[in-house]
Image (cartoon, rainbow, N blue to C red; front, side, top):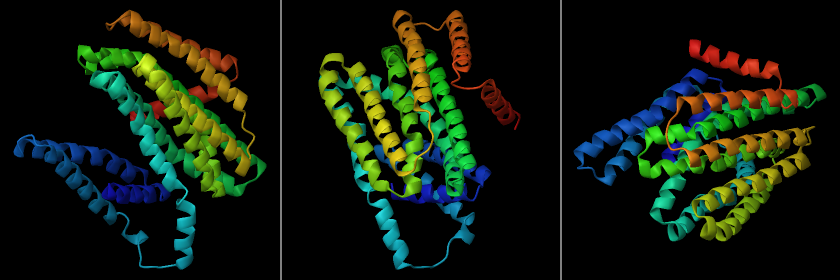
Length: 360
């Protein structure tokens, strides 16, 4: 855990220095080293759990050690009492948020163990793991979004603020649309990657995906609070989120089991995101069109019903169904353009970006 934080700090420095290729290489090498070494130790240590621990420890150590060679010019011996004070004041409100986050991530699983058994926990965990694909995409977009926001917010003029809004709307639509794609093809992925007893996990993916889609509402607020250095406001979102999560888990899991846990997680994210958005506007106001954003999320919710219904009524991979889903995604794009939720220019820009990435 400690070594991971050191490596994350180094990766953050690489982001600030705009060394994107090196950053990408380290992000790819980290899981590869950890997995490879864990497998090697797994064979030599008679399939002992310590093999995984040693593999992860050694893998992260190697990547961390190499990363310092690319950052030697960024380190020097220096001490400043005022910097220490500023760092403490800036970071201490985040500590309760981290503790709350740990409770948030484990309470639902504990409840499911009692009411749905280990099979229920397995289905819930699988749907959560699959949905985390969008989390990786969001983390990658953050590397672009955070510097862009801070750069333009520092300028502070009307044009710069409008640039922030335009970029936020483009990224929000991209995240929501990609989340919809991942939900649509969750059933096919689960069938191909798991055994039959876990196929039911596809029921829960469209619901759990909104844990990430709802977080888009507070994405701007997160940066507004960070820029204003009012970190204490994060506590409101965290407390609201965990309180909602605990209340809804107690209320819904005994009745609906895994589905109740997914609904609780998604709605808790919605509450936290709304509070972060509200507090973000409070500390650094921007002309955000929240009606447009909620309309986009509402449209995504309507279309998310489709993969949910399909996964219940069908348990096989069908070419016809895949084509139908692609057609429905196209309809979603067209409706979004007609309602002014995005523009054809933005959509063409997304495809150009994908094609450029493929060519590289």
